[in-house]
Image 1 (tube, rainbow, N blue to C red):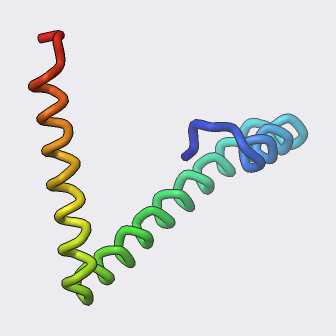
Image 2: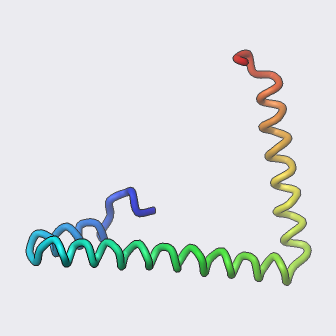
Length: 81
């Protein structure tokens, strides 16, 4: 998420050029923490949904099973070892 340049990268770059390295480092750290907290809250909300709905959890679990079986079959039938 932080690797691809976007509006926040342009903002940090412009502020760093105009106000110095210290401001740029501060904005980069702030942006990183914001991304970490956003991901953590998303994971927490997803875990709450899984805890409350057994149906959703079962569907996601079976999607994972099918995906792992698909990968296993692809590995078995691939020509390169």
